[in-house]
Length: 597
Ligand SMILES: *[C@@H]1O[C@H](CO)[C@@H](O)[C@H](O)[C@H]1NC(C)=O
Ligand SMILES: *[C@@H]1O[C@H](CO)[C@@H](O)[C@H](O)[C@H]1NC(C)=O
Ligand SMILES: *[C@@H]1O[C@H](CO)[C@@H](O)[C@H](O)[C@H]1NC(C)=O
Image 1 (cartoon, rainbow, N blue to C red):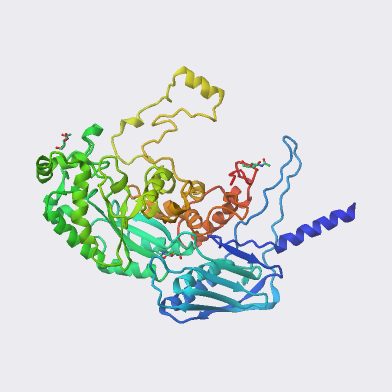
Image 2: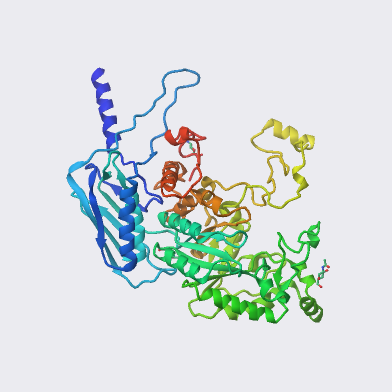
């Protein structure tokens, strides 16, 4: 009896020392740890290999960060603990934290050799981003990639798997073999820099975070106000490029166009002086203040668009360029004499025809480069009242409405789609309203429901939640609730698509609209939630058995958040310290596959 207990304990200790604790995020598509024991990493550890300006900088940056951080994971994956049956009070099955410092004295990793086959492949859509990473039991390290951009991803993984050993040294926990490549090519975050100004320094921090998580696109929505200098932009694009992050711009036209445009040609902007709300939906001139749309029927508008487009386009190397078409409002045009004249001259015309007029005049301006790929908000195709009649199929649609339904509609019609469904991916939702003088907050009682509904709710409270604006309702944030990392990670945005349609989904972007965002809150609104999107896009949200791996991401993202803090990105805490320190003690369900397949 005694013997068998001892054996069981011995076995337990053995598994604890052998299990690898570090878990890079996003988790690589294939990662296989060996069992021969930790490898010491030399204090003079270096990364060398294929010479290239971008790579040389990345080698130095990565090695420096590894040595500076000596990251010791703050939490790691562990089976959910057992608890005694309610209500006995035995000591619960706490686990021992295994020591984090066992070197295999025989082998030391001194160098990781990077080799890149093709130094010419540019950072554009379609470039190969795969890499392999091997650390052998004898301490040989290598990263192999077809392109610079693949090598940068390999360096990020290397950065995450070399950890501090808890004393002053570094280690790799076990020999490892990684074969990795992303599932989706377009993996981004959209920063709105028009509604509030966000300094370049803060944007660079976001690019850092994106490169750590292998996100590779960022888009900035600009107004043509001269807030960033041209040098700022060129500098930002280069900063991203050195980290494998593409930066491309959006200029929203012809909607949401007021500040900036007005100063250049006030006549090109209509309804800028109107009251946006008009106390009734049928008289709205804009979905949000400040109102203003470019006048579609006013000829000089297109000269203005051309000038602004040319000026911005020359600063960006990327093939992608976003030309807006977000949320056009019909009644704004009632303030424009040229537009009303156009409707009078074309009495049969619809707003669809009017939108088409815009496309026919504006698109030729944007098609100035053969490799230019235009992106537009889906409204141009899906808007109930302002969709154009014939939108060229080579324009990439950014889908934000109606989740899976609109992704289906667009891919079915043959459009390539960037998924930005507001219900899952908007990072700005759930913070309440930002328009003032809103008396809907002035309600003290919860909603009174018809008796039958109240009875049904009393009978089964989990089934139905009575809500009103002020009570469990959306509370002034049109896209409430707040999108948690679990919601973002769990989003199966190709669900219900045929194989052919799914191929049209090129990736996703999480937008952060900036009515309530500036540099002071930027980091914590983006991080670490964007890491959940990053992994969903890089290696998916399911484990080898096909189950959604939410519980596996839990420890990974908790640890990653702590790591971001050390890297001076002030990421939000996702949970209490107790939950961070006790893996899975805070799960809502003990069943680790409760999310199903
Ligand atoms: C992002 O990665 C994918 C996959 O390797 C690649 O096809 C795509 O070109 C990359 N996108 C950017 C913007 O670099
Ligand atoms: C705005 O103009 C359109 C087109 O002439 C017209 O149909 C519509 O009734 C006008 N709307 C309002 C609120 O006056
Ligand atoms: C765990 O949840 C899954 C999904 O709901 C279910 O299929 C499975 O039976 C559950 N397992 C247990 C042990 O209850």
